[in-house]
Amino acid sequence: MRITPRRLAIGMSLWIPNLFSGIRVRRFSEDWTHATVELHVNVFTRNYVKTAFGGSMSAMTDPYFFMLVMHQLGRDHVVWDTRGEIEFLKPGRGVLTAEFHVSKQKAEEIRERARGGAKVLEWFETVITDREGDVVAKVRREVYIREKKRVTASSRS
Image 1 (cartoon, helix red, strand yellow):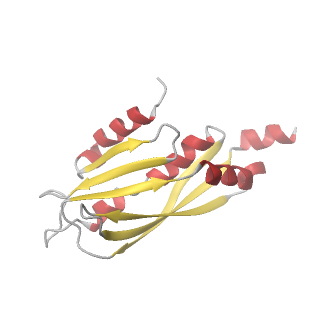
Image 2: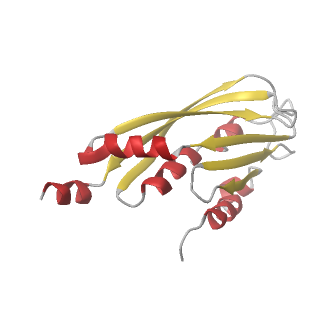
Image 3: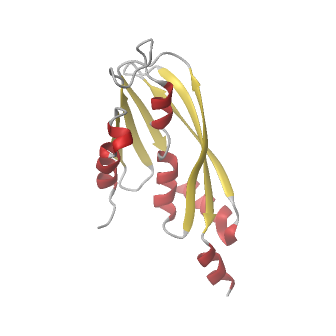
């Protein structure tokens, strides 16, 4: 079965760590350049002072940049999320949203930099907003990309 953007969004929303954390993947674009993720702050996902738990906000941003890069580059590359940073700006309440963008141009630039087996570490940034559009947190995620050894070896032959 081929993984389509719609199937992946449904699967990620039903994945137990996301499901029980109030995280819902609203969509992946058909060209894998964009994703929208929501965090529903409720009795199970809030902290002691009844605002969004910071760990849930971090979790809602964890895999999406690397997934967009991975789907654009295809099976010839190893792609991992290596680390993240989050700056909390205001308490999060209600439904929080994060938008992820990796342009086709950025994916092609990464492909070129990784050609021949070079290790690429690329930072991506997004924000988490509340229903009013106020920025609740700024997020940075580092993604590791490398052309797979079998590809590098075959290109040298």
